[in-house]
Image (cartoon, rainbow, N blue to C red; front, side, top):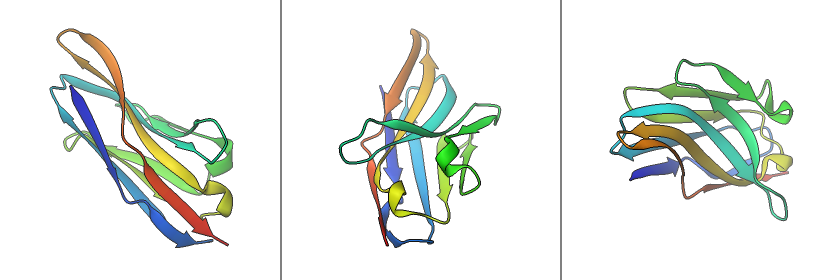
Length: 119
């Protein structure tokens, strides 16, 4: 079983910054792609950013140029640096990870961390 623990959410004024972290723990043979998704009130969960084990990234159009995803494979941690935050960035941010153990390939979700941006 793999656990993903997120941290770093909170309340910030528009134009401000936050840095989210997500640490994976458990019986992981190999940690593959990791990503951040968000769910705004009344909306479906959407991809924010994703990063492969080798460092290839992709972003939602709405966050390009403002958010940066990175990872530390040794620490099994993925980060999301969010700059120039806007009220439309409000939501619960979830970490996701694709991983492998001796029995197969799986994916896991964190519990979510709230991001609120005041205008």
